[in-house]
Image (cartoon, rainbow, N blue to C red; front, side):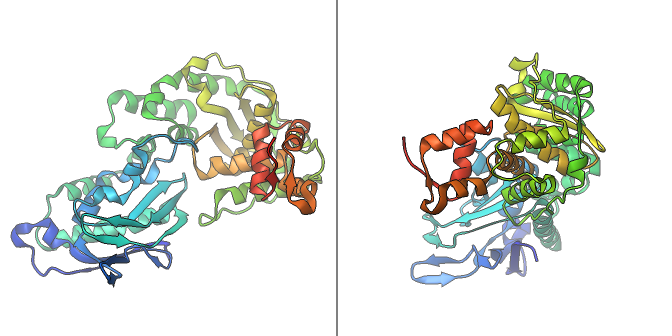
Length: 430
């Protein structure tokens, strides 16, 4: 059963003068798992369903479809004040109270989050706090059914020319190729109907330069303003990748890759993948050269890919890969040895999960694959279980000790500190 569900019962037997609000007047219940997020209080009374017109919610979903489902946070310190507004159903209220449900894309999955809120204009208090993850396909199917039902309801009353229906009809009639392109534009935070020719042409050109998987990574990571400034870097990466040293992937291919679970946090897959590879190669967590041995087995070249397009957006990407069967070309764009070792760890994971023929980019985007690759890299460099052994029964490490651990393993200090934090280890202040 889908984690996100809409349950509704229509209330109006006739729609006066073809009014879309009358036609879609309904009792609505939205659930995340078993939690009903439309449960609310008004004064001392509690109700488990809203009684509102559904038209505005349907219109907002249809008109913002591609952004709602495909635009992720561009990095973990996202400072775009409009991002939550673009992804919260509160934008669809129009005077009718709704719970604070946010629909946050994470690449191949979506984070659904609802926080308590009070709609002061209606004296309504929503008190359920719920969240969870679900595959993008499942969320898309749930929302599509809601929109199809709303469209059918309007047509029952002879209403066929609303803004909602025009937008939804256009989406429904797109070819698979057109839908794929709209997903890329939506990933940028733009509605396809609003994108200018310059950006549209640039994305088309990038598809030819990088291929579909890498262009998806690209669009998930950049803002519209960065598309054009990043073109030179993308072209350079594409031109020079084939000339790089082959990484040998046999050890990866022979290792058990954990299956994807869209309902679980993405870092878990990255963590387990690192453990599986260490076990396959017989590398002890205490081995300071553990990550180095992995890179050597895979023949990953840790030298710097010196981009000539630094001013054109290469800083947006820490690396790129081009996998062809059992070999891959890997470009590490990060400055500094420890940064490149982290990028090499990320490249190892992305190469592993991307299939026999794929180009990928390593980015700061908050998506499942990128997050899992960061956790994989952190775990092969500074294993959490190793930190727990060092912390022993006290459950703490000194600040200087964590710095020493990072240095001895060729890792950035913040990687070691974050691994300690995620392992539940306290780090004493300086």
